[in-house]
Length: 603
Ligand code: M6R
Image 1 (cartoon, protein in one colour):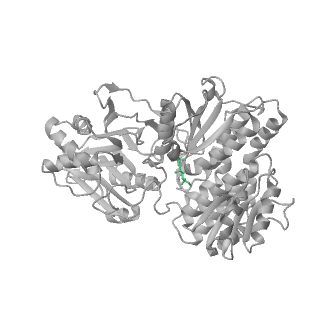
Image 2: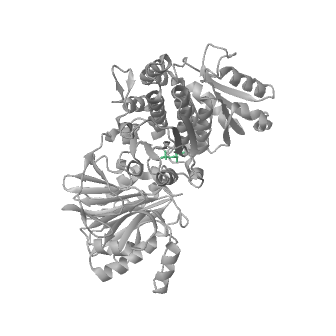
Image 3: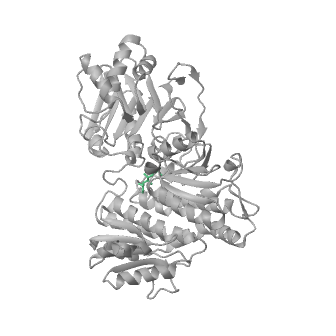
């Protein structure tokens, strides 16, 4: 939801900032812009509406002076995605980029208008530029001006600020929106996400909230926003490989990330299995004390679907009752969980505003909170009592694929962790989990692209696609529908198979396609009955399931027989590939679907 980048160092900055923006493009792609010191020393702003390629064209052959520069990629909230509303925004010598929302923008704007300020955009961001400009005139010092300009500002922000009169300084800070610092030899970066600068450094520091950092090619200093007290800088090396943030030989990040599913499982299991893979250890949870009396998962989108699978898995092996809540709904209801319940937020980015809001509510009500996230140092890691990292590596495609696989791995681990170790079912399931990356890898290697394309064509020809499933196939069905909707823009929905005859079956007629994952061994026969009901009404059904059992004829897309829950990985890979191929055939921008952004940092 908007991406920002700031650079201070000896490189030619327009190239650095443009390249960093190309790695943040998944966060927004309505408009973009950069600011840098031009050859004659003045602070130059170049902006363009539309995709980043428009800015790249506008910048052809442009270079800036080594030193400081900033860039922005926008996902519009206040004001249409026009060039005027694109960042950076300027007021006098102050030029800045912003990710977030200023909630008291109206009052601040009126105050500035009363002082004679003329606005040139409809954005909430512009008030910040004018306020910091006003403060700079009073203070004559950029960090002090930023601190003063932000006093009384409500909302969330990550900001990078330059001043024409202070060419060697870049001031950045955040509150409620992510910002990560990067450090290399004689240069510093600040960005909404690590992949922006991963090419240049792996030494990172998530900037704590309300801490102001002043970056220059000579060094870095941090102080608290409120009282200016110094704060130490502590950088750590992230294990992410820069190659993970590149497309390699794949056409799209989404395709590459689907094929990285096995690696995501292996890395998420790393260090979490003991005694020759016979026991799950989650040291992160030990200090929370006894096991929870109840678990409440809160999440959005794909992460919510992983939580639904988590509920089924945990309830299979333990007596802990599990609730799953859509974070944006949950945060405005009374929580009413049992004493001793844990509230577990699942979020790939660790920055989803609704999930963070739900966890904040839980914490205020005295519950222990746990974050499951793919991004170390993200807000969720700071705002929960314990963090369980999924280790899918950077996920760039807006449609979540390998991160979902890693989340399923993690909730499966949780189920085994809470289950009775001596139970033969738990042991069997653990063995299946350990084998699952190898089996997924082999399966992905054997997928016939023509078979996927045949299904993708059927999907594109259908007027409406209904995904159905029961048991573990239900979260898979709604995840399959979400994947298809978000990148093909085709009407699709997911329903529990048994619910169909309570309404949605009225939609079934020729031209409507039903897709049914069939990997839940317990409910397969019931699912097949639901399929028969559809076929009896003239509907076409595509099934994705293990070959060679009760299904006649063979599933449309046969899978190897499942071991434990690993059918979830196999079937979700097919559903992801199906959406991917259909979107590619439709000529859509797979990695940057319209209207979406990778992390939703506003409510
Ligand atoms: O970063 P999060 O996991 O919290 O994001 C939640 C959803 O926004 C995300 O899963 C979204 O639904 C994906 N685009 C789905 O592919």
